Image (cartoon, rainbow over all chains, first blue to last red; front, top):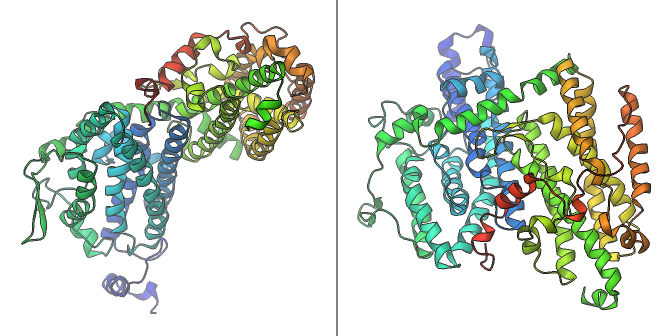
Length: 317
Length: 270
């Protein structure tokens, strides 16, 4: 390998591209083009902070979980999400080093609205069925997008995802168990899941992002595919989700809240009604149903505990 | 367990039942209050760590409720979710709110209170568990062995926080001292067996209230000494004795939240 210090930027880039083309993993201290670093920072800090913000909608149901075992299960599940957030923010922090930024700065970016969190976590969790549905279908959707990045060219992210995906599989089973109990239960319990599915359907479609940047003006999918961080497009992932979950949803006796939904045998694709993408644009600008409430909760608890972090810093110094 | 049940005298069974409800309700409420903190701890690492403690505690409560179910007292989930306030036997300390505000809105929880309550409560639990390992009621003695293994980590965790925050900024010391005062106000029934004192102590189920209090003080003494403080006095007579069903509004609110879904249909499978 030639000496990096004597190479021109073009040569470094060429070598970098060769490495990722060869399936080599890029590590935190390796040279990387600015565009790559920025794409990773955006992707991973958004993923990390979404795990942290994603703890909040489910956390609402932790104290209310309807049995001792459900209380134990959902506590462990939400704890895992916080753990994923921790893991990912550590990866993001390493990437942010050249900019002199740390986790505290990411929190401030979140509070200012500069760092976004995933659309699904802006939604209300109205009933216990929502707690089950989030585990089953939101985590199910997350498994699909994240397994798509298990081979990511950036080593630290790929390794974090290995563990996260393994736990997400357990979460999806946890969610499915809650949903199965309701599906086999009383009429009221069955109605609870149908109601939850109706309310969450659009958010689930939006989860994978718009098919192209024409919808919202920007999209990260092109640059992340170019750098081998991911392989499939948003639409391919959405179709994978349909392949896996439409039969399961139907087998529980539930109705898909889209009467146009059908499988086109000829094109081997699911045909469905597009969600309201203007609503999606509002949500990602923190104007969703629970965006401000959740941000307030995160902000107020962060500020309320500032004295603790100060006290810990004082004992270290 | 039915064979054990057959040989228990009615008096003995009543004493075991009473003690098991005290232990179960304590851990159940302690875990519930811990679970309200989920997602809101001072930093992410702590969120993960203290959630493990809340889960362990819920696991311990489940073990005790299951022992009660084995004694024919009813379904563990019914015992945990449906008993009215006046039948609850937890210490008032475990039912207290984490601070101002409701967990569904933007609560202002007090981390100093969380640390002091958790540390003092866990130390009390530790001396009880040490004694319960020799309990005359074998299923309880066996449960105590399992609980004890996890308690080691809980103790280490809360002790670290306690010493660190009391050795740091003036603001932290002030908040911690305020929390100690608040916690000790409710500490009077932690070691009380309530009106079942005589029955519980005379049946060899667990050591006497006085003996446990002394052990708690003796275990706390070196920790307080290390930071130049004295172990606070445990109130002689509790203002309200949770062991006899005297509780605060905080418990009423907690029970209504924690059983909200279960009460929709207690017969259904959830």
